Length: 150
Image (cartoon, rainbow, N blue to C red; front, side, top):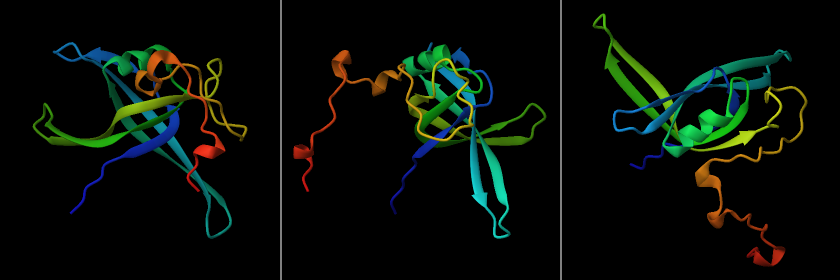
């Protein structure tokens, strides 16, 4: 049986990112993401629901994320689901599903809070995660029509 664990989400930060370090001195940044879904119900009424997701990003990306992001800003993340279990101080068993972020892209303007509102496309902010930057720091030109195989 094949397995696949990949998540791509775009939403707004629900709280300030929290940067900490593991005992091995690896940076880890924790943050919450709110993803809104809108649809029209069978009764014709507009409906909306919000999904809240806890996320973690590690390494140099954690420091970059913490430096540029703040509550309310929009971000696109890509990563995988991780299920954790532990025993609470009162002896009860606890569990939590979260997203471990591999890549991210800042959305919206740097000066704005990145909140919703007017439709239309948003331009990515200039700051990117280190893994998204092309080698040598040079921007790659878009492929020409001659490079498309059909």
